[in-house]
Length: 465
Image (cartoon, rainbow, N blue to C red; front, side):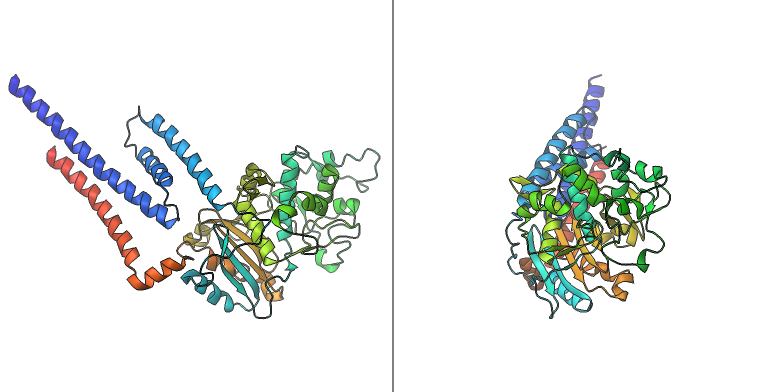
C-alpha cells in the first residue's frame, strides 16, 4: 500500500513537473511572438506585450476554464489601455503645419517611395505620414508643395464627415429617408410625377451607394458644372436614374447630400466645414476652393481643390478617430469606425463603407498591404489610411485619359507607402546596412528558439510521463 502511494505520488509529481516545464517553455514561445509582433508593428510598450500575451494564452486554452473569464476581463482592460495609449501617442495638432520626421526622405522606405513614384510621370505629389509626421514626400519638378488641385470624388468623403457631424448632433439619422428630410407639404420641392422610390431612399443608402439611384445614361453628354448633379434642390432630386435598391451602384454625380446638410443644419457644406472642421485643421479661406452649382450650393460629388498637406491632414483626422488635437473632437470615434466598416461589396476586389473605399491586400494577392480605407477621386487623387501601421498615404495626379482608366496609377503611392515591410526609420536603415541583415537574423533566431522551446517541452512531457 505504501509503495503504491509512493508510486502514485511520483507519477503525479512527474506530471506536474512536465506540465510546469511545458507551460514555461510555451509561455516563452508566446512572449517571443508578442515581442516580434510588437516590433514588426512598432508597438514595443509593455502594455501591448502583456495584452497580446494574455490574448494568446486565452486563445490557446492554456488557462483553465475557471481562470479564462478573469483573464478575458484583464485582456479587455489591457486592450482598452493599450488602444488609448496608442491613440494618445499619435494625436497631433492638425491646426498646425505637419511636422517632418527626423531624416525625412532619407530612410530606405522613403528612397524607395520616391524612386517608385518618379517612374509614374502623372503623379504630381505624394506624402506618407507615420505617427503623424511626414516621413516621405514626393513633388514633381514642376509642382510646388503648396499647390492646390482638384480632388474630385475625394470630396464625397468630406461630405461623409459632415453628415457624421449632423448624426452626432442628433440632427440627422441614417434611417431618415429623403421624403423625411424634404417632406414638401406645399409641393414645391419634389419634381412632378411619381417619386416614391426616391422618397424612400435613406441617408444610409446614399452613403453606402446602395440607394438604387444611378447615374443617368447621358451623364457625360452635358458636363456643365452649373447643372451637373442638379442645378438646384429640385433638379438634384430629379437628376439620378432608378436602378436596383440594395445593390452597389456608384452614384458618380449627385448634389442631394449637400441639400440634406443645408436642410438639417441650416448651413451649406462650406459653412458647416468652416464652422466645425477647417479651423481645427488649419485650413483657412483662400487656401482651398469648393466649386458650386448654379444655385450657389457646394457640389457634394466633387468640387474641392486642396493641397496635398490638406489631404494628409484629412487622413490623419480619421487615423486619430475624429480628433484634430488631443482636446478637440470634430466627429465621434463611432462615426469614424462606422465609415470604414463593410457595408457592401463594390468593384475590383474592394468593398465600400460610408463614402469610403475599403481595400484588403489579401483580395488583391498583396497581403503585405493589410487593411486600408481610402477617400478616392478620379484619376488618382487618394487619401489612404492604414491604422495598424499608423500611416496615411496621399497622392495627387494629373487627370488624363490614361490615369482616368488605369487600374494601377491611382494606387501608385499606396502600393509604395503602405507595404508593411517598408521601413521609414532612418536608424533602422543605418543599422540594417551595418549589420547586413543582422536584425532579421536575430528575429529569426529568436523565433527558432521559441519554436524549439515548444518542441523540447513536448519531449520533456513525454519523457517524464
